[in-house]
Image 1 (cartoon, rainbow over the protein chains, first blue to last red):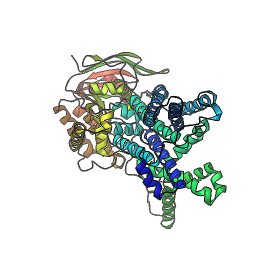
Image 2 (image 1 turned 180 degrees about the vertical axis):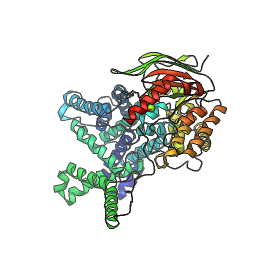
Image 3 (image 1 turned 120 degrees about the vertical axis):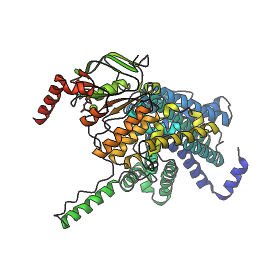
Image 4 (image 1 turned 90 degrees about the vertical axis):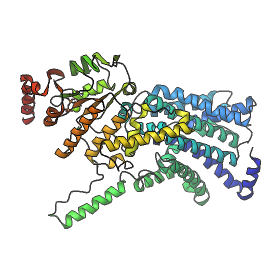
Length: 324
Length: 257
Ligand SMILES: Nc1ncnc2c1ncn2[C@@H]1O[C@H](COP(=O)(O)OP(=O)(O)OP(=O)(O)O)[C@@H](O)[C@H]1O
Ligand SMILES: [Mg+2]
């Protein structure tokens, strides 16, 4: 599909970078969609990779056992992942608090163990023989589609309602927002795109194994969201790109660090949190730790030099807090 | 028939009876105040009326419809909106977006029209934003539309809460200590604002500690103490009421130690 465009791209991208770009694209779709739940709706989601797995195995099985074509399988992958999203989201998103985190974490583990023990999925040996039908132009189209849909969504009545839920769930309810329904919607949309990403993954790597969709993958995706900026779609594009490419780069430059990828991710996140607490592209709204620390140092030295002047410490914002 | 009828309203938290068998009615077009010492249960009454808590006992009927088991968003759709004592704005959203969120139940665009914005959706968006700007002008926040809510000064945040509630097009507006933290000038403006609401046929139920404001603006007052209604009447009647004087003197004596 889109072979002419593929030929064109392959003529000036070598096969190594071609593969890296496909991985980046798939991760962008995953990160964008995860950001909808975590960054825009404010719900902690620790199992995004599981919805990717639903999509990947759906596409893989439809391709290898049922002879379904590429586009049909990709669509089915998205839809089935969305159904899984409703099933996991509905009971947990009704409750306030971090039940979603626990439920998504649990769902990921249950799914992984199920996939390991089913015959049809090849169990621990994985699912083989999926044709390679994902190519870079298709991935680029999918990234564009995801980005445009999500951008339109967050700039709408629905999107504003999601952000309102993140900002203050009680106030959002009181303003007439059916918070349960909207949280489930957000979660389901994210699952849909994760399913699509999973299908593209299946049609690219041609081999699926449950360990490709474990808890740590979900955490890596979360790290990409936070790195790029919670509630910032362009940030997710940058975050997923940087955090997918850097380890690849390190593999050739500094293999010792690349082996400790998660340590590297952790270090990267700590640096970002200090320098830009709202992520690389996050609107630097509240002050960062570093800025607060610097301001404190400054005001301390100022007080030291002019001890008699009653200068209050610099306040962070104009708005005060109401009485209890 | 009254706009809102509350009968035998009781709200218990574990062993604590925050509201105890309270009856009152709100008539169409009036300004009714609820006063009482700290912890009397005033805010809890608002929380029950808006569906944040479901009452332990009692009946709440608004325009002939029972509200007891409804969720907050249903109650808003029926025509009750409120502000919060501890300001609860959507801090990272702009001022106008806060107001448009208030209009959520009055807008139609659903999930797919939110994504694939057709002409009808675009028109609705534009009209909603224009209306939001009008509400902001009404509460005196013209020119601050694109500022982030958290950047507003305290008094302006209180007025933004009112604009957001008005965007829900309520028949009944609940204001929880709107003058708290305001200076005399701001309180004066707030009072003329509330009077203007009355002209727009919006009924106001007000919780307020500023007695000068309460006595000046209210047509009737309900007094709560320890969750119970201890008095009800016009400002003049309430001012003379033995139990009210005792409750307030008792409260200030307690507070004074
Ligand atoms: N969710 C809750 N859980 C437990 N107790 C609560 C809850 N909400 C309110 N209360 C208690 O109910 C009582 C009444 O509180 P409420 O906030 O209604 O008082 P209030 O009249 O609004 O006081 P204030 O003038 O200080 O705002 C208090 O003792 C309070 O601690
Ligand atoms: Mg109160």
